[in-house]
Length: 384
Image (cartoon, rainbow, N blue to C red; front, side, top):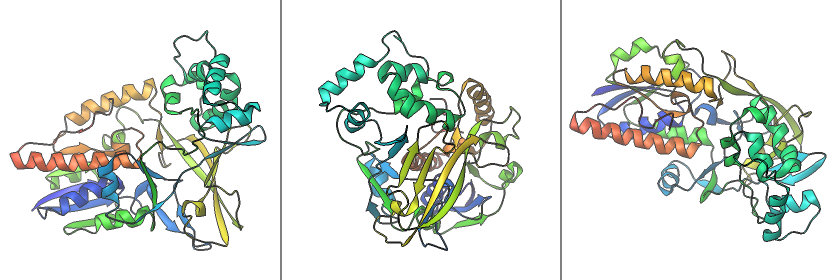
């Protein structure tokens, strides 16, 4: 059997390992430097409270891709869960994303949808005809008051940059709704795995001919021992950071344990710039079918990712995109190596997108094998 190496035991690596392993045609080694599988989606029971913790921050599964939804349900039961985020700003609590209730509460009105839409249009800055920055986009479409309450301070804390330095495209992903729908996601399917994400990944990797090596680094030279390498680690690390380190934001979490219910909601954002954390997550609310006397909260802080930190969000500003383009050129010259996942393609990916792309990679690899062709370095264009 051909030997396959998969670097990274998160969803990208686990899906590819499972799909290739179940063919019975490959001997697969999965490597991960951490002491656990599932990457940043890792979940585990808190020893003191028995609450299921999202160790690297909240992960809510949502998708409109029916194929992916059916696929993940093959590894665990998904329980009903709707992500309803709240925001604290200027001493008051509001509903997110900005919706009809938010608008009426904030301005002390009783607008209907048509009236609310007309009102926001009237307070938007019409002098900004073609918004180029995050700030201009917000001022143009929601006006100064909503921008400063819900977007400005949070963005500065999250990205370490003023919204005037960020592209308008970031805000285009934040919807404003003119109804009372406070479901944070517009996806068709949404839920939480009953036994956590690590349970799912462990089941994916519990496949014949798949061997997992935790707390084990994979050196580029080791690829010579394998017919193909699927690499989901940082693309710049594969090349020894020869074009410089790609920029990421990382997160720090300050955990607290309390009796009872701390905030009454899974996630509450804090929009004021003088509050140092971006949000507080209360993890027992991610498993509403469970009952716990005690609770665990994470206060979340964002900062620039240093060399030894865990990378979360790719910055992808002009400097980083220029570096990425150079790394893509190097990657395309590699033989029998494919770069996958959030770190391998330097993109922010939701779980369902990661899984869908990993399934596509596995499918295309098997199709290439069948005709004696070679899988390219990228199945999805990282700059697309």
